[in-house]
Image (cartoon, rainbow, N blue to C red; front, side, top):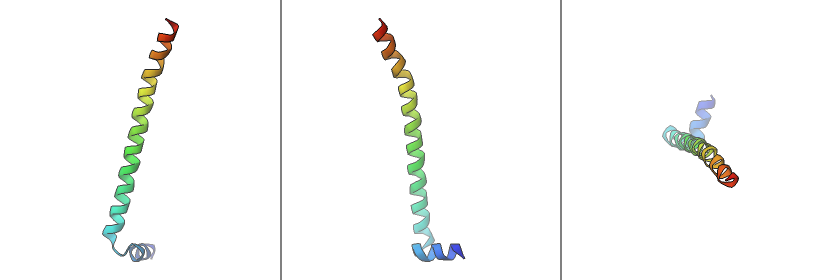
Length: 54
């Protein structure tokens, strides 16, 4: 029943799948960027601290 309502709302199942996949890709890209950013910060911050000590 819920599936029928969803198909009726989005008019076609393909449109809904496109919407879902684009959202999924955005989530994956965002998580990868956050992961890369955290690694970059973890590498950069200690270097700056060492330079300040010298």
